[in-house]
Length: 183
Image (cartoon, helix red, strand yellow):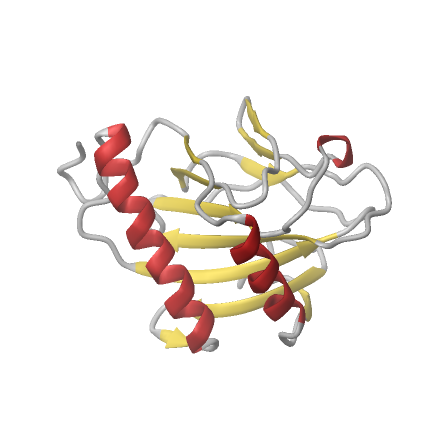
């Protein structure tokens, strides 16, 4: 287990079936009714890429109280699972910010990383209720490819190079994911 608050994890943890089909369909429906912004939810100029996003929280400001509570509960549940199943503990943590991202065919993204002194961990959750592998949209974390599986979450160090891979065809759904940035 980690003892030092600023240690970066070296493993990529895949947590399966965090949300079931019923929970995903309800969440997805509510997410689509949110006000999505077209732009980048990142504050720096590193990303000149525009895509639909919703800022749930940033630092000490909560913009979407419902979703902040929802995802905070998920982080707590995932931490319990990690302690029990993976012998890993987030330790004393703070959610620095939460962003929702939507992707369709032809959206472009850029490989990036986050300063681990600012974000020790990144937790990405796959929120689209139905997905086929042939559609693409995998999460690439350095040399590890993780398939987009509805209801699954992935925890990794913020200093690992990562990106959502392109979607290969027009879809009947948005590829919606959540990024939870943890210190």
